[in-house]
Structure formats: C-alpha cells, structure tokens
Amino acid sequence: MNWKPYRSLFVSLCLLLLFAGCKVGPNYARPEYPVPPSHRSDAALPGAATPAAPALTFGDVKWFDLFRDEKLQELIRTALKDNYDIQIAAQRVLAAQAYVGVEKSALYPSLNAEGSADRQQGVNAATRTGFGGGRVFWELDIWGKIRRSTEAARAEYLALEAVQKAVTQTLVTGVASSYFQLLELDQELMVAQRSLASRQGSLKLVQARLTGGLATQLEVDQAISLVVSAAATIADVERRREQAENFLNTLLGRNPGPVERSRALGDQRLVPEVPAGLPSVLLERRPDIQQAEQMLVAANARVGVAKSLFFPSISLTGTGGYQHFEIPKLPFSSAGGIYGFGGNLVQPLFNGGALWSNYKASKAQREAAILTYLKSVQDAFRDVADSLIGYQKAKEYRAQREIFVITLRNQLRLADMRYVGGVSSFLEVLDTERQALDAELSFAQAYLNELNSVIYVYKALGGGWVQ
Image (cartoon, rainbow, N blue to C red; front, top):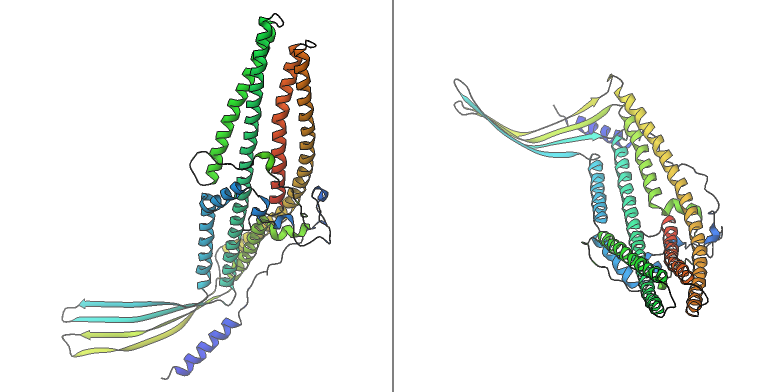
C-alpha cells in the first residue's frame, strides 16, 4: 500500500493545526494607576519638574557624573566588579535566561538517536536482532501552553534583570553613603582631637592659675573632666571609623582593612541641578517597579498555561532507521530500512478537580501580582516625596547648624578671654566648651545627612544602576 499520499495529508493537517493555534488565557495589559501630575515637594530641587520639563531628569544622571570624588569613583568601580551580591545576581540572570531557552525548545520537534541489539537463545535455535535509527517527538502547541510557559519564563528572566539593576543601584548608593560616612567620622575625629588639644591647654592654664592662687582645685578638676571627655570621644570615633572601613570593604568584596580617601567631607558637592522629572517616568526607571511588573506578566501567562490544560494535548511521533533480524541455525535473515509515524491525543476527563483548582490558584496569584505592582508604584511615589522633602529640610538644617557652630566658636573665644581676665568663672568656659564640641560634631553629621539626602533622592528617582 502506498502511504505517501496519506503521509503528506497528515503532515499538512498538523501544520495547519499548528499555525492556526491560539494562545488561551488573557493577554497582558498594564494595570492603570492614578499617576499624580507632579511630585509633592518638587520645589525641593532646583529646576523642579513641570509638564514641560526637559527629558533629562536627576534619575538619568550617571553615577560618575554625580559622585565627582575620584577615589569614590574608583571604589564604586571596584564594588561593581568584585562585590559578591553583584556576582550572585548576574549568575541568577544567566540561569533565568537559559531557562527561557529550555521552555522555548518545547515548540520544536525533539529528535533522539536510538540503537538496540538483542540475542535470545531458544531450545533449538538462537535469534539476533538489531536496530539503529532515530525517533521524533513533537507536541503541537495548538492552545498556546508552551508559548505561555515561554512568556512566563521570559518575564521571570526580565524580573531577575530588574533585581540585578536594583542590586547595582543599592551597591552604588551604598558605597557612596559609606564613603561619606567615613569622611564624616574623619571630620568628627579632627574636631575631637582639636578639642582635646584646646582642653589640654586650658588644663595647663588652670593648673598654673592654681599655683598662683588665682584658681581653685574644683576648676582644675573641671578642666580634667573636659580633657577626659574629649579623649573618650576620640576613642569612640576611632572605633566607629574602623568598623565603617570594615563595612565598606565588605561592599568592595575585600577583607577588613583601611580605605583610602581623597577629598574631605566639606569638599563634597552633590547639589542636584536637574529636575526630578514627571512621576510617570518612575514606571520605567525604578527597578522595583520593573520587577513587580514582570512578575505580573509571568503570573498572567501562568493563567493561560493553567487554562490550556483543560484542552486536548496533541503530539506527533515518528520513527525511522535500519533493522536486522537473523536466526543463525536456519537459513533465515531479514534486513532493511523501516519507518513509521503516528499521533497521540490526550483529553482530560476527570481528575478530582485538580485542573480547576490549579486554574483558580493561577488567577488568584495574578490578582496578588496586580496588587503587588500597584503597591510598588504607590510606594515609589511616597519614596520620592519623602526623599525630596528630606533633601530640602536637611539642607535647611545644615545651614542652621553652621550658623550655630560659628556662634559658639565666638562664644568660646570670649569665654576664654573673660576667664583669663578674671571676669567670669571657669564654669562658663566649661559649659561653652561642651556646647561647642557638640555643635561641631552635630554640624558634621548634618553635612553628612545633606549628602545622604541627595543620594536618597537619586535612588528614589531610579538612578544609580545605569552604567
């Protein structure tokens, strides 16, 4: 019988079913969220965003254009290369990318080589058989199950890419913040050492006045307490500074050790000179929103996969090769090429409600993913608003602390003059000296907070991960 016409008809029918196949389940559409026309506290940044704002936003600024300190740039580049979290995230992205290929491969036929040999010994004779050839299996994706699975895998891969961006963003801003913390501790240490030297000088002066009968032992004891307090402050700052170096080295992928610095804290300038941008830009820039959306895309595709399981599964099989059969003791042997093809259809009929429960679960997971996405957008808008007002108020606070420091410096100078001139007691010097040291330390922390507030604005607007 000639099978060729039937074979051609069968292949043509399968191809028609394949190309006419559809993808069951909902197609993805981004959920709508009431995006505000502008950020609250937009005025916190010079050139605040308006509907006619330029395309460039503060979040678009490259990190090496924001952080101008050459040593800091070197440290960030080291971290991006050697940090373990960065390397782990990169490997996870590569694994997810490969898994997309695994899912997509099911769209194509699989071909396996096969070979077998067999010898059977009977009472009167033995037989030998052998086969060599190949087998083809192809599941037709008529309902889109494989394409939906591939869509979900691709979305999960893109979600991990967004995670990698978030790790990069966190690392860049984290290294910068830790570096500025070190500079702030350097400033604190310098202030404490200067205060210690000044207090040691005051102690010598009081001791000399005691010898001359112009001071009391109480004033000497008060001067000693100032010296001891400054020395204790130095020890505490040195402890915190070394621990901060160890933490920064961890971000750099290094063992604990010293960290080089170049510019001082007061030489750092991170004033944002570009607008925050329109709120809608956040939907495309922030890695956490990108991740949430891609996980929603994956959950949406999984609904299609669950729905496709209700429909028949159709697959094709084919076999071809060379077969040999022989009975050595009898003048009988057979050899030649063989081939065959067929199809298989499986329609679920009863499974105790497993398919229906699986479908309901996938829909619930999609609804949860929608809510997660909407919450991530809401959190992003709040994050930007908080960071903008944080920058504005940190800048104002630092300016007031600077005025306070200058005032106390003048007060301390006058208090010393009044004490030496015998106009006031050492108690006035003691009180002013304490206030002056606290003010100097508070000013250094206020300057650090202002720098960090700029970093928080930068991160909140989605900056820091673009290389």
